[in-house]
Figure 1 (cartoon, rainbow, N blue to C red):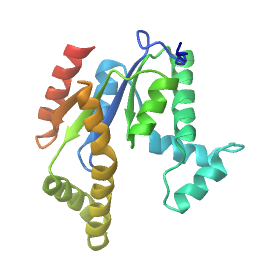
Figure 2 (cartoon, rainbow, N blue to C red):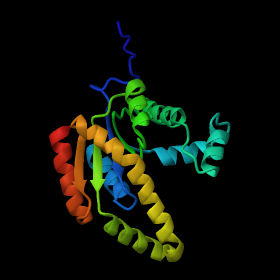
Figure 3 (cartoon, rainbow, N blue to C red):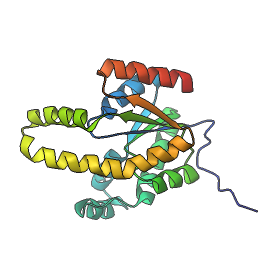
Figure 4 (spheres, rainbow, N blue to C red):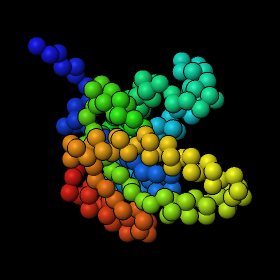
Length: 203
């Protein structure tokens, strides 16, 4: 007899959408739109880790700092605990039950662990975009920040990391028919129209 562990939240009551896409695919912009129109809470794993690192009296602060300094991925237990706490807070304080989780899961073991312990996700919203387009967008963005030269290399590294880590996650969710792919090559408004179609059908 297998023991089934119960998750923290009931997927009938709490909706989680994982948001994935390469750097420059426009995830942040689209998450803001979804948050505004569909009453979602937007949680960025990276932001939560950075905030926790600064928080006075944090039990994870020093550990996060050391991992980030060494350029390593923070242990998933920490990231998942922070996501779970942020969800609990939004549910208790603001009665929110819809969550966009951005930049997570980076690997399949993170996805599995989250779904086994916190709640099963509804689907992955994947913003697909060619490397050329992403590069062009990020170069434009970096031109205003004045760091064009050193960016090409770091941008290419970020693409590579995205490909190596996120593609397997997207493929695994595709097998379960849980990927909603959005063509992020289009204009912001057109992309959002496609997002709305997906959400209106799925929610």
